[in-house]
Image 1 (tube, rainbow, N blue to C red):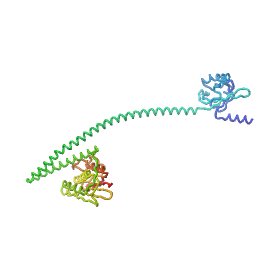
Image 2 (image 1 turned 30 degrees about the horizontal axis):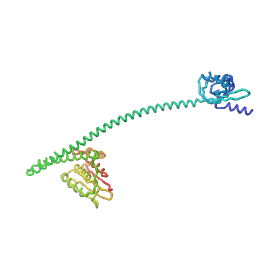
Image 3 (image 1 turned 180 degrees about the horizontal axis):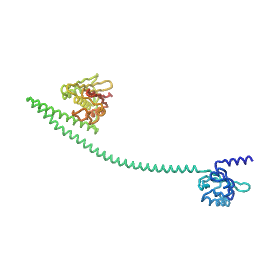
Length: 395
């Protein structure tokens, strides 16, 4: 009796549905879990054919399954778990896993069906399929976008290649033009310079201040044009990578004295370039031509942007670690807003006014200095002057 009560309690409280039927398919018992699944009271099911809980086509096939098994012994669902569909009282269906076992009891056969609801699992599977389908759509959409992007990149690459080719051709044309124009201009400029010097020489017996004045204007204009041509040639060589430093040992003091002497000739009235050297040695290992160009540009700027009756301090120093060159003037200075653009090509500070210049000098200085592994720094205040410092590490 205790075992029967325990078995009944287990069946009554089982999570899965349990239904027993006889050999004719009539329901003999149904537990509460199965009643909840099919939405039927026990009284409505017990004694009726199990087919009432099956939708078509399972309902029409059920009796055939039982008859065939009884006559042939070939189990179609007996002892084999399978997924089937159940019919609820309200006409709706639900999926469940059915396991059927055969029991011999009191000389007759009883079939027990164990019903596990698969509604949640199927719902999860459907959501997973929807997510997978949505993911496939996204992948397909992204793949198409990627393919379109790759095609666009290829077209852009072709356009860029064509542009680069045209730019290269234009660059070569520009280079040839600058080189040709610079050389072609040099001949007439030299002739003008010579003619101006001869006019000055032949006019010496005459005391006419206008002759001297205009001859000096011609010389200054020729000098400015020559400087512009030299700047453009230097920039062009830098752009096409034709400038390679040639390091050698030379006397820095000797070079600086030569520069000072040359630049003093073109200085303004009563402008004095004062050169000093600090250090026991005067030999440096740099490119003398590039360094000379750098110093020329800095001293020329100091002359250009300083007034008459001023001093330009030009110093060199050799210590244990560095070669250092400084050029200091008391000129117009550089506005703070312009200082960050100072070494850009063709840039000129806003306070230069009508003072001639190309805006290339400091760009060339910076690039020549970099080629020699050096750095350029400056300090400047408006109307207080500017100090440029070029530093080269001793390697």
